[in-house]
Amino acid sequence: MDLTTKYLGLNLQSPIIIGSSGLTDSVEKIEQLEKFGAGAVVLKSIFEEEITLEYEKMVEEESPNRYKDDYLDYFDYRIRQENLEKYIKLITEAKSKVSIPVIGSINCTTSHEWSYFAKSLQKAGADALELNVFILPSNLDLTTDFIEKTYFDIVRKVKKEVSIPIAIKMSFFFSNLAHVIKKLSTSGVAGIILFNHFYNPDIDINKLEVLAANVLSTPSELSTSLRWIGIMANRIGCDLAASTGVHDGASVIKQILAGADAVQVVSALYNNGPEYLETMLNDIKSWMQDKKYDKINAFKGILSQEKYMNPALFERVQFMKYFSDRK
Ligand SMILES: Cc1cc2nc3c(=O)[nH]c(=O)nc-3n(C[C@H](O)[C@H](O)[C@H](O)COP(=O)(O)O)c2cc1C
Image (cartoon, rainbow, N blue to C red; front, side, top):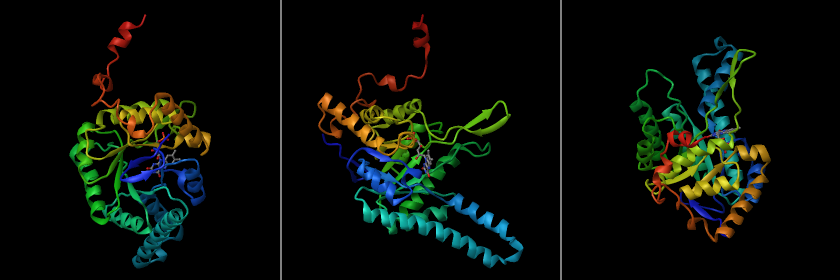
């Protein structure tokens, strides 16, 4: 059974990519994931905001009055460099130990840093870059156009600096999602990841406090990316990777049938350990054997909206029939 496939022009030994998270933050973990059959790994994002927070904490603790502006600039620079150097070391060492693609991930807030980090990661040997763009459209004063433009500006800036493939990991918080995905697919990115997973809020009704809900996804979250992979597959100019809610081999198969070129997995491995990857891949192989598919391309996208004889199923949003049929 041939599980190899292509994503962002890279050769993957399997369609399962380990998504950006703490699962990929050391060379040892990456080596283990390769052994269990990962097609590629996306490193934990390097966050500009995290670096800025570290700097602000340092300034607060060290009393800013002790330093002149020049010194503060120096500390800012040093913290940035130390974080970046740690990240670069991880890429370089991982590249020397594994043969699966190592994809760097960046989350920045200022345009200058997107370019600087991207260039540094390419120089370190990253096979591709994932731009983790995380904009919750919660600002009452920002227009749709402004938010969309931010995505395109980031892609343009990074694209100017690097020659390795770029993928963008986006959220579904758009009023015209299909159009934005289509437009992004012609902006120079080699792939789009549908979708990013936000921290969700919850409320403790006893303590009357707002808190963060579980950071791990549940299998029920699969359907959002499945719908949009199905709708967009074969209709856009770049690869598609599915992310969020993929907890077993069957979900990987569903995403590929819908048209995903690769499938990212995180929570399932936090829940079951990295060795669970092998179980997922074995389940995919058994299913392929059963259905007589000898390679991934043989069933990729055959149930996408563009190919399926009942395309309306991907767009059905109303429950009218469901409830009227129920006794
Ligand atoms: C502990 C943890 C850390 C994560 N860190 C990052 C990150 O640094 N960058 C990023 O783009 N996504 C990050 N994610 C999101 C995952 O890459 C993924 O998009 C999300 O977990 C949904 O996939 P899943 O349903 O397979 O878990 C993180 C997720 C978890 C659970």
